[in-house]
Length: 361
Ligand code: ADP
Picture 1: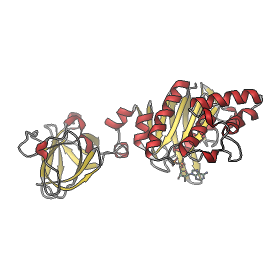
Picture 2: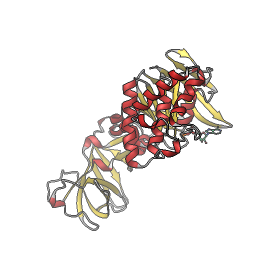
Picture 3: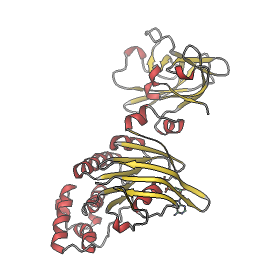
Picture 4: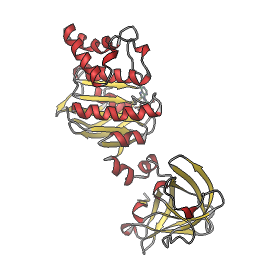
């Protein structure tokens, strides 16, 4: 276990600043995910922690000690990357023993520890196989066993699951989470997939342009994103310019009219804001079904079946130049809603507490 702290880290390549005054503090035993779009600096941040990248400015501290200039092999870390880099000419067992032997363990000790690491990832019978005889998921487990075998104080995982198919990926997400918990290791995981970050992490750091925009528990990132960037990245797709009225409604103007939604915007009365509406928090009613007064009468312009959800594109009747997206669960839908097909009229409502308001800067 290790406490990790990054203080004012910056890194540039040529004239491009890839990490920009980044501060991050990770508690011992915590599972923290760096989440963000491709190119925002996630891997570079991870490499700075590993010692594979030297920051231009700033300090990396592990358990309070400055390790900024410490070489990678002295940092007591386990690493797993998307490309597994298993040696094809060595057996599974030999792959896991390799690092231990290089660090001076006896053959018997390395063998014993490799066997117990394989046990941990439920591959005890695969010691003598070649990596080419394993499935993608099994190879990924070997890579995990190899990283865990040296009992590292921290695990750094850079998109380790992105090559796996969906089902396997979901299984491995849970396995990695359980393994790191069981071993009490501090873990830093990199991904651009919000769902992966949400299911795996104690906290998520959402990165943008080399900085952390928000670091918080998954539910806070998902339900109360602090900036429009974070909101957009975690799936809030309806964004509009709005105005908060004195009566606490947010008004969104279209070409021919406006829509008004009851919102918790008391501290923003009389100001222009950006309004974010998460498609999944919409409640869709049929006409005459007792919708709240601020529900918006819309026509359905598209309905896409997505399995557990139905995604609806909606156009408000009085402001047809605005377009809203709502997602409703496929199961347990009121019968009165009908098929929810193109051309149908519905009322859509966003509860006040679900409406995201951001002051216009
Ligand atoms: P992410 O992991 O979020 O996709 P990276 O940290 O890999 O982003 O990269 C951030 C930016 O830094 C990208 O624009 C990338 O092209 C650039 N970059 C990363 N490594 C190097 C390097 N060794 N030389 C030059 N540019 C680099």
